[in-house]
Length: 594
Image 1 (spheres, rainbow, N blue to C red):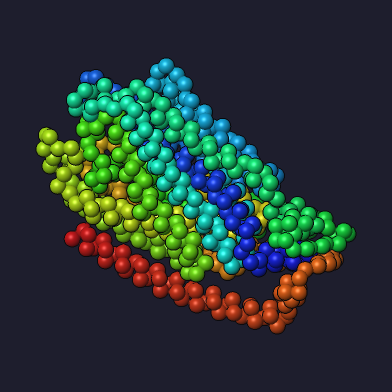
Image 2: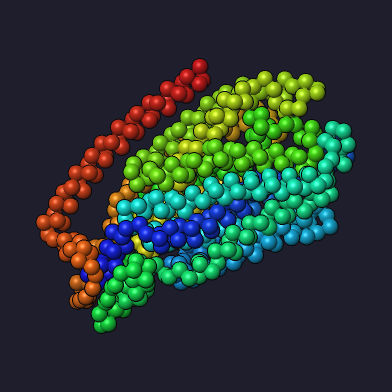
């Protein structure tokens, strides 16, 4: 790597944690906060929409969304997200991270407002316009995945890069918690202003007409946090790695980072714009990319795909799980707003106890124990807990047939506390596990010119899994039949176990620079030698010392042998972990079956 480029990257990698890092976490994190709020607040309002628009007088039951309509409302945003991840991921590498970052935010704000304004005089027209706007909302959300992750990884220092990216992603948990909290507050306020008797006493009158404003307010509120961060998002400079490695403008990269790190860098005018040597660069669809990064991309994409089948199924079916856990009474024993209030309160409780802590465990531990161990352990424990839930589902949840005619519960005779604990532990180890690491690792592994694209492909693979969860797995959970749900949960357990094995395709990225991981340190070094470039940098004495030792032959040789030693030890540890995990899982399945 040329000295001028190296000095900027070395300064970024070795920089002490400072105010700007936290500012970048907040700016990027608020986008993810909005993403999570918009994607998961729909869980709190779908039952209310069913009561408002799909009440059937011929049935002695509150209105309920038909299976296909429910799947469309919950799944259409995921389809938009998949498209947005691919499109904006590619665009982020072509136009730059900063230019595209604002487009995604404006899309999210506009479509969140439009979702709440869904118009029409019939149920079909309202649901149709809602699905239309939620698709484009998802499209904007999709762009935020690769851009937020890549921007944070390229700004972060080497020592705490994992924690910084994880902190951005942890705002997803806060967004889910906030979605439950906002839904709880709004539904409670309307419930106090417009009380009504339960459905069992007054039937259709239990659905307050004013409830039509409630779900709209909840959906529109998602535009607020995104709009608040627009100004600061536009003020962020382009990342130095994109400016130097993709645009080839080393002087601008140095100037941008001098403002960020409050440190002076100078690069010779003659070499401030240096095109990449075409002999050492390669395209995304080239054999060289496949040989260098193909297995890595397969690993990041497949593990995210498998994780999201289970993770989004859990999230999108929360409204059906809460009655089984004893957190929500029978729908007929409540009015419409009362049901939404208790559903939102249960959603907030699960988020606070099980979802949010998992994210922050990852933040605090990822740079200590590494991405690989967290992802491997998360997949394995998710598989075990879901296997227990699946094989014992009827006993843990209870059955409708066990409830008396006057019971306020949907399911009786089960063990709701144990059911809730297992459900919560599954969520915890999803977030202190593959849900976080699958977001982090693709932002670290690939070259700068492909980084956003590869993250977008990995994330889109995840959303393909989420779509399977929304449109396929949910069919097994709609009617509450324990046998169907049992098969679905056992199937999800197997999916997580497959994710455990695919994790071995993903290398550990802890403690390595982005250029070392992507191989760009070698590529740029060859380019600099071939083009005869000479850079001058003015940095502090500590930085200069660090830079001068990087090129020491003795240091390089010792670093090489040390790396080889680590890789050999890692292979032994991986083999041992694989054997132990397989034996443990076989034992658990054996115990459960018998």
